[in-house]
Length: 201
Image 1 (cartoon, rainbow, N blue to C red):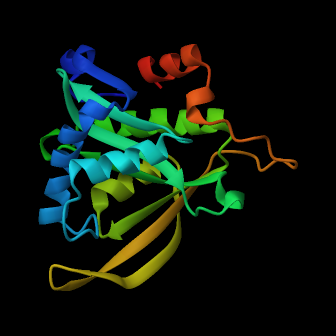
Image 2 (cartoon, rainbow, N blue to C red; image 1 turned 180 degrees about the horizontal axis):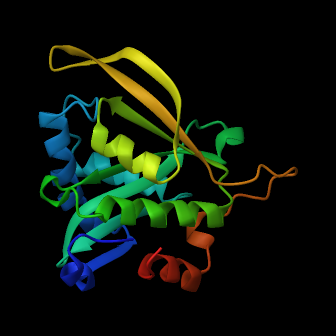
């Protein structure tokens, strides 16, 4: 990962989410709910509601945060595309950054680490649903090897306008038969996880 401001690189930490992060995570998300169509939520969830989502995600998949100078400035996580068991090897990704921290390479750093951990879990495919146009997000996903899967026109209505979305996908595995068991994130080797989070990928 190449950060644009290398002198601040030592002040950046990637780690799994903690419950005390939820206030800052909710503040990050609130901006996108109130000011953009990047998310289709009309109202910002409470910290308690967002914490429940986080706890559900963490039962199986990674939920990561990025800290800059000790402050949470971004987060990314994966969740199954459907609750049906056969879908557990396929995930949808979500990522949000503090509006003042865009363009610094932090989103790339979060996603690179998230994807590497998903590969360690034996996840086979990652999907992203992106409001279109969103050049920054679409460019990020393309840079990470995501390809366009489908285009949904007028699929959401927000801010008195119909919004389009694109679905993108990235294959993480080789689709072996039989498929290896999905390893819950909490059961991955701690040293291996720490190495992914701390190294340049």
